[in-house]
Image (tube, rainbow, N blue to C red):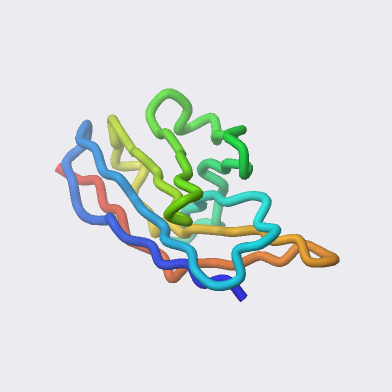
Length: 118
């Protein structure tokens, strides 16, 4: 089992920045991919960014150039630096970890609210 705890959400004005953190604990072996997803009211959950255990990253088109995902393996923590925030970035942001133990298992955090509004 892997436990994920997000922090760092909040309310900011458009153009400002926030940094989300996701602390992982538990059975950390064979976690191949960690990432951030988000879900806005009335919409499906969507991928924001992922990072593989080395440093390979992947971003959704709508955050490229604004968001940066990073991973501190020593601290078992993944970060999402969000710059130039827009109102449409308002959503609950969820941390995800994918672990391979014969098959892939997905783990989710409880989510952290990000609100961008003037």
